[in-house]
Amino acid sequence: MWASDPEAIPAAPGTYALVLRLDRPRPFTVGALGSFVLQRGRYLYLGSARGPGGLAARLAHHRRPPARPHWHVDYLRVAGARPVAVGWMEGAARRECAWAQGALALPGAEAPIPRFGASDCRCLTHLLFLSAAGEGMETPQAVLEALARRLGISLTCVLL
Image (tube, rainbow, N blue to C red; front, side, top):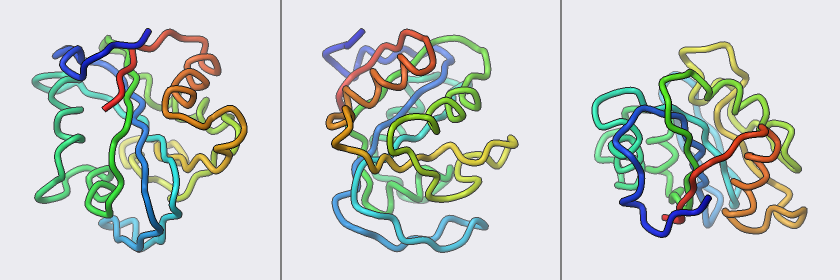
């Protein structure tokens, strides 16, 4: 289901899939993970929001340019990646690892930075580069819909 306004994001705990766009290749450093060069294109970050303000607070944080990086995805924002869409599911269940695993099976999905966003779990990564923009994944909407189909779930989504 698609919402028309980012204000529709609830202040409840949940799991989210954030689609980001990087307009040009960028070198950047992510804390202890090291230095990398990111390709121009579309990225998918899988995360959770269980703290105060839930999904609304976490995703508002991700939409603002970070003054000082806190989470791994903040480093991506500092490098110039901008959020373009988000899909979420409310609930306290820990789903981001299953979502990250399932997202690796999306057409053209690559793990550009091992352990990105996965410092508190055993996942390969929670950040995917989507290199197959021409394989049914041309838009942020198509990415989130493909993820929902792959996982067999229903997401509420909004363009940012």
